[in-house]
Length: 590
Image (tube, rainbow, N blue to C red; front, side):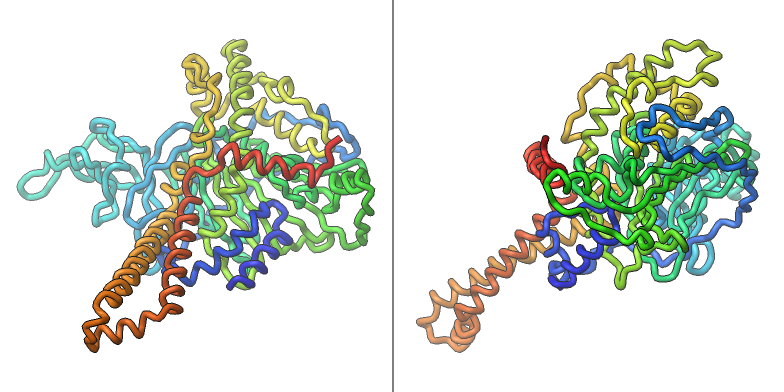
């Protein structure tokens, strides 16, 4: 198992350039599997329903942005985002496996709360129902209630019951007559249903309208490798106190990888004068949607420069075998990237991201590592690795966000009502200083945010009060921005199950240690009695057996505790300073 874990980490670092090389002590984690019962404390044998939505998209001609400009102050070719419509899109909210069957769960999109539930829908199938998380009776959260035997939402306050498919009120206990009949109910007593479905294991909501409008909208974007034979996706989820626009800028910025994470693989996605970045755009659904793709040769750029500065020989590569690093953003939520064969477009590993805009200044991060692996990676193993990885720059994003959102609020205040929906804020243009050849994508992405964020639902109604309250100028607190328990453990049943199993191992190890110690002391104290049972116990508890048992119990207790702590706040300033010391190893100080 130890050798297998080393091989697994090596494979991950080779196949996935976006995965952080966590310290080698984590290679011992797989060995610990033999000590812990199944960490998959939550599983539902369900067959996700594939949506039958059509994909008749009206696509405008592609726009090719010139790839020979090394300092992209402005995009060489532009197109207006005036028709982009946030209400015409589906939004990812949670992995289907993270929903407990027949249990209401609250999710949030654009500062609006919704309640969803996974309910049975025939043999080995499930369906998702959703409503606005507000009982029309007295405005209590429906997510605080329960799912009835008929699959309806029932408010815990007064027992009002609602059909999650259409939002109709189907039961008010206080007005039911002796025969169980209920009088006609007005529309005011009904809730608001929200279209919901499962695509590739992800739950999607359509908050922009009813079912008819949802059917007319493009289906959620899919990652082809998720359904390909031989690929094994491993999923993660985490909530961040980071605006989703800032988070997506970070995901699509490979230049930060060498410094914030110390991961050499990021350099394969960056650009240089010798390996320029090409950009392709598509405006889809009559301009209401937008897709942008970055392509660059998967070869060393900054690393090659660093080798030259150190007097080392550059790595020569066969140009015919160089792959293409591709990153695609389906606005407003989905990113997937991988190194692909330039002829076939095939790859052996894809990293995908689904970012839900839960509200102004906060977002839900969902990701999947999708690779051709011989075995499935335990989900808790990826969670530990990725949480360590995410902690390295999340606090940096929180410090950046303070200035970006404050500039956005200032720009909004300076506009009149007519300009708010038509004029770009130019926040990114005026706040950022673009210099890298890799930032062609970043420049265009910044234009997208500057032209569209004002039209995002509830954006203006939340941004300005945040400024007035002083929240935008408050310095972020590390323990809050990196609180793994609140951001991840509480919303991931698999991680909750793993933490519980770690506690069980600690209790079992302590019990074993105590039992062995008591038995040994008792046998020594009573050996003079020459009893048969005492002699057998003393013979069994030989020094070698005692030492093995005590050492095993101590190691198990220590390792279980160490693993359990990975799911709580961890990344202190001391750990940050330790990581900073590694930067000169990837980029020589001047």
